[in-house]
Length: 439
Ligand SMILES: [Zn+2]
Image 1 (spheres, rainbow, N blue to C red):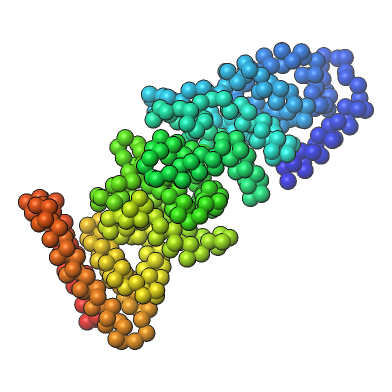
Image 2 (image 1 turned 90 degrees about the horizontal axis):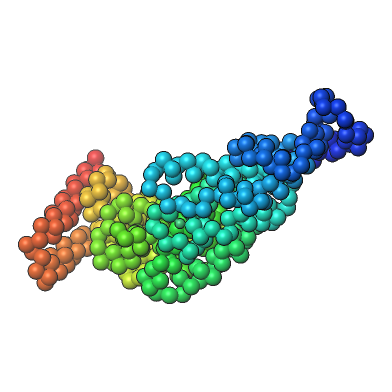
């Protein structure tokens, strides 16, 4: 709609210009002032640029919408090296938070400027012109800047989000292809995904930072973010999709690298797994995305929880709890229908433990067990499931006790605390379960 009115206005303006040669008077009428370049036509480019030098980026972005000719002159102006040196910040290593936020605003204005001055160009040309200004700056390029506090990617993200806000899906697809070509994104992802997790730590982190800050995090609503995430994952088989999801959203170590072994060996707090849960919810929040089903969800989760080796069961349970009721039920119900009851029982015991430890209402876990129970049609199947769940409680408590004895952790305060939480969770679960039955 904007394009139509713009074109029409430009045509009208041109016509006026053809009918009336340039006036020689210094005082211009209103119509003369609006003709093509008007007053500015008589200025040498250098003087015109000097005037533009006095305007803010936001003012120039508004000014360039006056006419096609002005747009062309503004494009010439912002193509100059002096403008680039003056306006495009080259380094993003700021010690002060205030400086960081002002650069975010600056890049939002730059996004508006490029959005407005390239309005009449085809999508690919718009992108080429806009990104040509950023291509040689190390802080915007993957594997070129290793400063951990660098905010270059996030500023590029702000710029991109502003530039393409409101573009349709086909145009965004072109943006994705363009960025892949510009940054060799897919080749870089392939290099990470074909090696064992944790071997190429620097490349993993760079891939994560670029994708998160430039493509995923700038979008505030789920469908936009889902679009980019689906495009990043689509080219790969399920195992690689799971690995890439962990690269993008997996827990980080204090040194900033991805904590692959922590998923296997330690119990991670919910704050550490929250990002991954958000990533999974972004991907599966709206299942009607082409080609993604509940089965894809199950397959990806199955793969995620065995990378790099099978995870600590409490981490799997905590991730499920963080992903919410529907997600949790879908995964457990699918396993139960496929006869994987031992796995379902073990997961449920850990989900109950997580509810106790993280302070979620135990009635939620009881309802979940009731819902799973309803999947079985006969009374004997229901009884067998409940029996298995109770046995699992005893088995996990015994296992836990024995492994701690074997490792001589009996004196360990953390061990006693976990054992106590496990037993308390058991008591609380059964109290609510029986109470609901007796009501
Ligand atoms: Zn940097």
